[in-house]
Length: 458
Image (cartoon, rainbow, N blue to C red):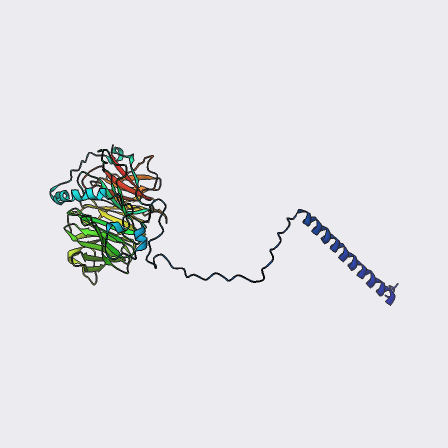
C-alpha cells in the first residue's frame, strides 16, 4: 500500500513547531547566562571608580637626551664600599699631568707610599741581591691565611695584582674594573710601633678597567699602569704626580716591561704588541703577533730578547725580538689550545711555561725547547662576573698556583701533576688573580672581588 502524500497543512504545522523549539531554546540559554552573571557578581571585587578627568591636560615633561658617563667624561658609578673622589667627578677625562690629590680617594692614606719612597734607594741595589729559594718549602702544607691578612681594597673586582719589588716588606698594588689603583702595605706600623690595621692607599687615575701594572726593580718610584680606555699612566711616587704619557683610541689589554730597560714598555693593542719608549713618548716597534687580543706578555727571566704571549685566538707563542719580521712575524714556538688563552708565564728558571685556557686546561710546556706538554684538567669557567683564572709559578719550578670555584687555591705539583687545594675560613671570595713576592719566599697575594688575601708561612 502506498504512503499518504504530505499535504500543505501538515508542512505548516511542522514549521510552527520548529520555530517554537528555537524560541524556547533561546529563552533557556538567556536564563542560564543571567544566573551565571548574578553568581559571578557575588564573588567579584568591586572595581575602583575612575577619577574624573581634568578639563585641561598638564603639559608633558620635556624629553631629555640620555648620554653615557663615558661620553660625558665621568667615571663609572662606584660601589658604596669605596668612596668616589669628588675631584675626579669634577674634572674631565684625565690628560697630561695631575697630582695625587686629584686622584686620591682617601686623603689620609699616603703613608704606605711615603714608606715605599724611603725604600726605593734600597731597591736600586737589588741587582746584586740573589733570591734565596728554599726548595724544602712545601707550600701545600706550610702556607696559611690569617684574619689580619685580609683587606678590602676597592669596591669592584680586582683585575691585576702585583708586589712592589721591595726587600723585607710586603706592599701589594692592585687595579680594579673601575680604574682604581689600590696600595696595601701589609707591614705598615702605627705611631706606637704596632701593626697598622689599615695601611691602604686608593687612587682613581683611570677611566676604565685596569689591564696592566708594571714596576721595575731598578726604578721603584715609577709605577706604570694601563687600562681598556687606551691610557698609559705613569705614577711618579717621588714627585707625587700622575702622568698620562700616552692615550689611544684603542684598548690596551696587556702591559709588560723590559727586564734590562725600565724605559721600554710593551703593550698589547688587540692582536698587536707595540714597544713604547717612555723617554721619547713614541712607539719604537709594532708586530702583528695574534689574530685576537693579546692577554699577557711575559719576558724570559734569563733572556730579555724572548717573550711569551697569550691570546684569545687560542695560541701561546714564543718570540725572539731580535729576529721578528715586522711585515710577517714568525714565532719560534707555538702551543695551541681549543679556546681563548688567558695567560702564559715563564717559570723562575725559564725552563717551563704555564698557560691557562678557557678550554678548562692548564698546560705546562717544559724541556729546553718547550716540546714536552703536560695538560691538567681544571675548571676555568669563571663566568661573566669574575675575573678569569690565571695560573702563576711559585718561587721555583715545583709548584703552580691557580684559583678554583670553591673559594680555595689549587696548588699544582709539576712533578706528578697532583692538585692540592689550600683552604681557609677567611677566604670568602673566589681567588682569580695571584702574585708572589719576588724576594720574600712564602708570601702569596691573591685577589677575589675587591679583597686582597696575603698567604704567609705558618
